[in-house]
Image 1 (cartoon, rainbow, N blue to C red):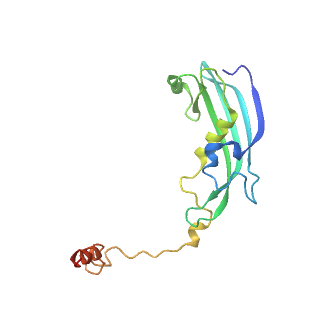
Image 2: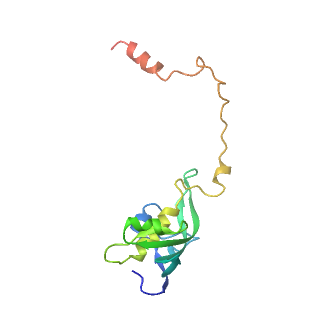
Length: 169
């Protein structure tokens, strides 16, 4: 799989990552981001006891334009990802990897698409619910104390329906 130590460095435009593009406010970036992500990859081998396994060290830096789900305003989320991936051909090989190494199942032909690998890591790093820093402070909500409103005081959601049913046609 990995014949020798190899390193790659470069950048990809966010618009090349179609799965990620749908999760962004804009793939072209914003005033604070250029719409690209930088990456560094280093392929090699690591010794674990008597076994050597092929591995990939990955670093990705990007500023992703997201939409805050609290304020619905766009904001830039800076990301820096560092990941060690153990390259495996079969799922059974996963047990032989150290605990701090994530498995990466390599296709039969042994070729990886770097843009797909970088895109996967960016998608995994996205928050489930994007919220801009400070967005939680901007919205204040008062919740009534539990049990402060009795059942008699609350409006019945079906009262209007009952009134309509009683009305003559």
